[in-house]
Length: 306
Picture 1 (cartoon, one colour):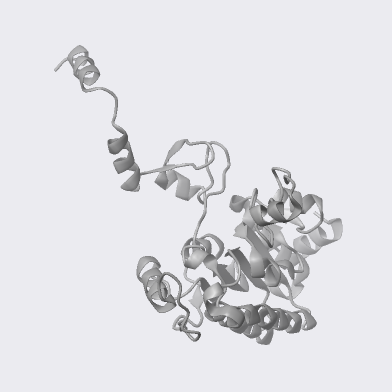
Picture 2 (cartoon, rainbow, N blue to C red):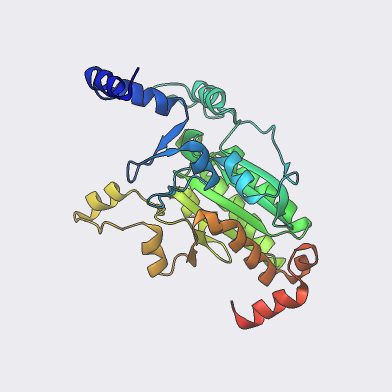
């Protein structure tokens, strides 16, 4: 078949159907950016940590990807993997809470909405918690609260910095007051960690809202956020209906919070690991011995404020 014949047949068959395009996207070969609509080869996108190569939009990533992005290979030691939620209140909505939990566990292969563990970040030992928005919107129930509390307490005993990547819709309503109690429990563990003069850095990703924002997400020594992440307590529509006025377009964005002093820095995902390593080195000199930076060079960085 000649090239002319190929184009003639192509013209007869018409453009690629929407169904075929959707099938190719569903196969996982290509990923469409929600912000600019550009199709990107998924392998290239993952190589850029799920940040759009065209518009720098930060796509949502989940707990196992967070661990892979931040923790050095072969150094991850998960904690409390077997903790499972229970339907203590026998909550009933359109579907029993117990059934809903089993559905999410089957779908995500997670027992609940956070992964915790110890590992090395650029050679530095840390305690890491990574929330997972796939599991009931990353909502904070008893298991999420317990796992994060145990992680912080272990970090306090072993004198480790704590990093928690937040991604949550807030407290889990199906657990009622048991869920709200986790705010105080985690905050208490963080206060003991602070009294031990240890570093805690929350990383606020899209979205970080509700009871998570009202507790451990805003208790960091240094609070980092991803670009254009939604960060707030009550939802935008709830506030607009209460105030009966239109809010600015960038309301509750990471950039808006930075301007008002609620976060300390906005860090692109591709720079997050390097930034965390520098902050840990500068604030916990005892960790420098295991880091690739010579001690003298790191102390020079500290003295110059770079």
